[in-house]
Length: 431
Ligand code: GAL
Image (cartoon, rainbow, N blue to C red; front, side, top):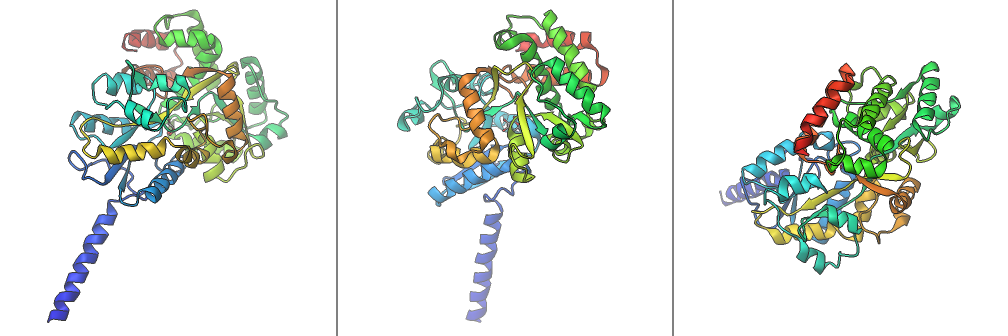
C-alpha cells in the first residue's frame, strides 16, 4: 500500500513538472498573449515580441539561450505573437497595457511608437540608472539614445539596427539577363522592363499585411525628397500635397506595374521566396530578409543573393531599431533589468544580430561575427544620413501609421494618386 502511495506521489510530481514546463521558454509560445492576469511571479520574465517563425525568431531564441545560461534561476516566457512588423502583436499589446496587464518587457520601435504611444501615456519606467550602471551612454550612438529618450529620460534598450532602404536581388537572375544594379529610378525602370520582357517578375511584393507596400512608398519618398525634406515631411514642415509627394506617388504606382500578380495573398517571407527561387528578380525589404535568406533558406550572401540601396537613396540609411523597455506595474523589475542588461551587452547583441540580419546597436560589437552584408551595413550606417522609418514606427505616431497603411492599401488596388495625397493630408494632424 505504501509503495502504491509512493508511486502515485511520484506520478503527481512528474505531472506537475510537465505542466510547468509547458509555459516556459523554448520559443514555442506563439500566440500566447494571455499573461498571468497582471504582474508576473518573481523569477520570471515574459518577453513580448512579434518574432515567431521563419526569418524572425532565430535571433531571439539565441538571446534567450544566452540569458538562460547566465541566469538559470530566472524563468523565461517567450510570448511572441506572429505577424510581420507587429501587425497583430501591437493590438494585443495595446489591450494588455490598457488592462494593466503589461508583459515584463516588449518589443517596440525607437521613435514615435515608443514615445507617442507608451511614454506619453506614462506607461514606461525610465532606465537612466541601468544605462549608468552598465556604462552605456557612449556605447550606443547618440542618435539612437535620442530615439528612445524623452525629456532627459531613457525609456528602452535598442537590441539592433535594421536598414529599410535595401533591395535584395537574385544574382543568377540578374546575371542571366545582363541586368546591372540600378542606382536611380530611370535605371531601375529600364532594368524592370528588361526583366519583364524576359518573363521574370521584376519586383516581388507580399502586401497581405500592408506595411510592406508602405515601406516601398516611404523609400520612394526618401529618394524623391532626399533625407532633409523626408524628415521635414514627417515633422509636419512640408505638406503631403507637396508636388514631390505627388511625384513619389506616381513613381510608386509605376513600380506596382512590375510586381507579382498574387502580391495581396503573400506575406513578406512568401514574397522573398519568389526572389530566392528565381521567379522574381528583386525585393525591397528590411534586412531581416537577409536573416531569412541566409539562415532559413541557406542562401549565400553575395553568391546567391546581392543587395543595393533603394534607387536614389544611396546616401541615406532608413533606421529601424527594435528596442525593449520596462513597463510600469511590472513586479519583478530586477529580473527584467537582468534581461535588458544581457540584451544591451556586446555578447547579447552579437548573439542576436548575425542571425537577425541587423547590425548591433552598440558601437563596440565584434564585426568578425557578421558576414559581408553586416560589415557593409555597419560602414553605411556610419557614413550615411540616418532617417526614421514610417512603416516601422519611428517617423510618426501609430495613429498616423494606421491611416497611412490603409491609404496605401487602397492605392495599391485603385492607383488613385489624388486619393492617396488627400488621405495622407487628412491624417497629417495625427502625426
Ligand atoms: C520590423 C521589425 C523587424 C522585423 C520586421 C518584420 O518592424 O523591426 O525586427 O521583425 O518588422 O516582421
